[in-house]
Amino acid sequence: MLLKIFDDKVALGRAAAEQAATAIRRAIAERGQARIVAATAASQREFLDALTQMQRTDWTKLDSTKLDGTKIDRAKIDWTKVEAFHLDEYIGLPLTHPGSFRKMFIEQLIAKTGIARYHLIPGDADDLPAAIREVGNQLTSAPIDVAFLGIGENGHIAFNDPPADFTTEDPYLIVDLDEASRRQQVGEAWFSDISQVPKRAISMSPRQILKAGELIVIVPDQRKAQAVKACLEAEISPMVPASILRTHPNATLYLDRASASLLSPHQ
Image (cartoon, rainbow, N blue to C red):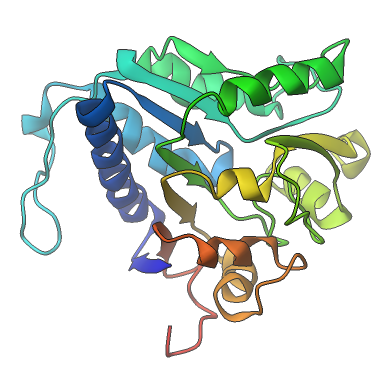
């Protein structure tokens, strides 16, 4: 896994967005479309803000030079050729709830880009198994070019809390949320207290996440430092769900100084 560390999460977000935009443009150039998976929520805000600005044509007002002095390709992304999926959703939570990942997905990505082909995980569907199968069939109908991920405070990816299921080939699965994961959602102010946080969710499986051609993992903030350390330094294990990302041949982990603060010097 390639590791990149920045001074703050704004710089982190812009750099990750540049790599993401390159991956999207490459897929469109090679196959006429790009299929992406995107995480949402608080930790992804700076990254998604930067990425969704890639639709702008007035790049002359933005800095076009990387830290190493090379120029950035500021070509516009053709979002009409992008198909998007998201990672997870609570069971039983309506789309209108502030903590709904469908709501965040629409507000943070879809509404800002005009992506027309997007697929929501309907956590409040009447026939939940059928709804999960349908979105899973859509996801696996063609390869995913790039996935944008975060890592939870307990080391989860998507909503795969420890111990995560590293064996299932199902694209989406129903998972039980542990207390640490639920408390994180309260800490991010999506819920007033833990009693309001659902106990189950639908999550993209770890093996499905690994099927993306490229992984861009965005993890800012001090509260993620212990999870980052475990991801990179612990044994690859279901007890550290994010550790499985190290097995992917094309994964980049973006950190800020805070989230990287506990890493050993050799990292």
